[in-house]
Amino acid sequence: MTDILRAVEQKHAAIYPLMTRGMGALAMSNAKSEPNAEIRGHRIRRMLLAIQRAFISTLPWSPLSFAIAISTTVIPDTSWTQVLVPGLVTSSIVAGIGWAMDSIFKPRLSVTPIRSDPPGTWTVMLPLITLLATLIIGVIFLNAVTDVRIVGLVAVLVPAIAIVWLFIQHWSKAPLISVARRVSTYVLLELPTYRGELILLMMAGYIGTVGSQLLAPIVVNAGFDLSSLPTWLILVSFVWIIPFAGQLGMNPILIVTLIAPLIPSAASLGIDPTALVVALTAGWAMSGASSPFTATTLLIGSFAGVSARHVGLIWNGTFTIVCCFVLSLWVLIYAFIS
Image 1 (cartoon, rainbow, N blue to C red):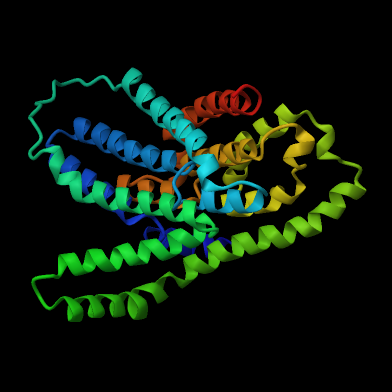
Image 2: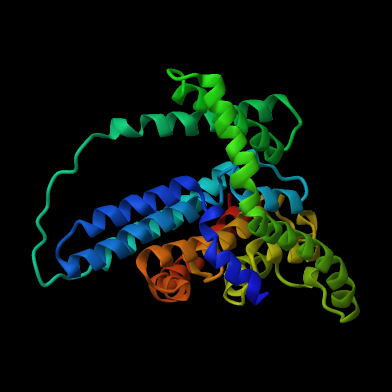
């Protein structure tokens, strides 16, 4: 296990979203242009944390996230369309707390920074917004007219959009040859380098699925019945157990697939199945912020020159605890009041 985690740490950028990697690189480039070491250090930490917290805030609702794909698979009678609205609320809570804490606990500087207006305008983001809008609209439309699960739709739409985008980028210089060469390079050269990360992710789901089948009889024979626990306690426990397990090196995919079969049915708990997904994805997001074994903390730590544990526990420790308390309240409100 140590060797696997070390390999992931060495190549974690391969499984981290490309857009977030790019934003991290841009943030570091901007920060390093600051001549004052004190301002530069604070700027690096604040910008990288903003990027990380923005990323984890997408996990509870994005159709591209493992959190949604896995949670809606292991919890029966749930889908992305059902989770989208409460997931956006979870996302707003996480992002809002991150912004509020960054504003309230803004570092005090011994010097006055020289401020300048940033170059360019928001229009430079239009291509990115167009791509995201195309993906989301496409997923919503196909989900409404087909019976294909969200995971299958994303697996088809993302490559299709990527191919079209490549044609647009190379339209002025032999598009067919250029796109064929780029796809060939990705499939034959780049994709095989991700085999370690892909094996780790697949094995996390496999171990969790198989382990849950072995664990269930043990739990029953021990006389421990989760259905005897209060529903509110089961929901809140997900928000805390998943990030805690992350501190022990357990991937969220592993812990969710491991505990999901042990969860009593939503009907027996007296709640909507979507409430279970909301609780699981909330805990998943917090694991992404605090676990030193996730790609998010590993990459942020490598950019900042600190350990992933420092990012997860020192930089994000208080943030994670505050979010867990607020998200626990939100999960209960959604399950019993909304």
